[in-house]
Image 1 (cartoon, rainbow, N blue to C red):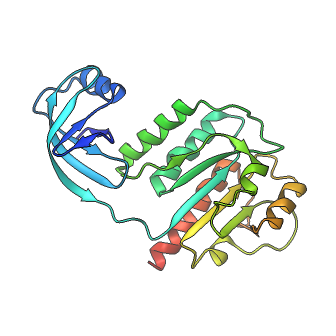
Image 2: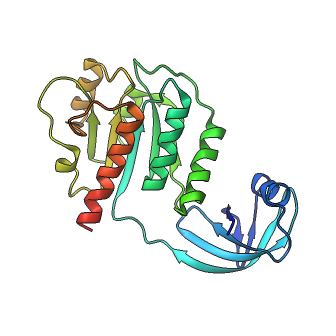
Image 3: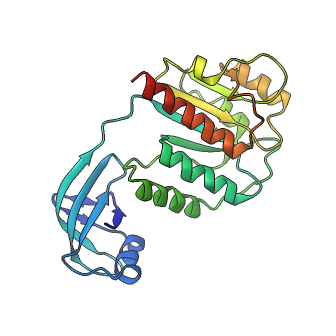
Length: 237
C-alpha cells in the first residue's frame, strides 16, 4: 500500500500538498477509490480511499485510524557535524529516522568541512525514511548552527553527552544514559572535536562518553548513539 504524508487532516479527509499530490497523480498514477495510507507525522497512521486525483491538491477520504503510536519512553536529540561527502550524512538521517529520533541538529564545528546544507533535500530524505519504515513520527530538523551556539543552549536536556576520541577514560553512553528520559548526544566531524570544544562542552554540563572501542566515522557514530539509546529502553521499558 502506498504511504503519503500530510498534517492537513480534517475529520475523515486528508488533503495532500503539491509534492505528495504530484507523486500520487503523476508518478504512481493512482485512481479515485484506490486504498492508500496516510501518516500525520505525530504518531497517527490512517487508511483511506483516494477521493480526488489532482496534481496539486489530491484528497483522501473515509480515513480510518489504524495506529496511534504511544510516545516513546525516551526523547533523543542528536547534534552532529555534517560530513564532507553529503551522501554519508544523508545516510545517517535515513537510518536515524528508521531507528527512532526526535531531533537532529547539524553542527558547525571548527573542523566541519561543510558550511551549507540543502534543507529541502534533507527534509525529503527524512520524510522518505519515515514513510518507508512506517515510523509515523517526523523528527525536528534544525538549521546548521555553530557548536558554541548549541553548546550554550539552555534548552538542551540535563542529560547531555559529547562523544569524542580524545585520550582519557570515558564511561560508555549506555552507562550514563540508562535512566534518562531526555538525552542529547553531540557527535563531532571526521576530524573530531577540538580539545577546546570538548572543554567548552564540559563547562556547560556535558559529560564525555565513549560509544565503544572502535574508532567510528561521524555518521556511524550517530547511528550507534541512536541504537544504543533505543536498546536501553527495549531492555528496560
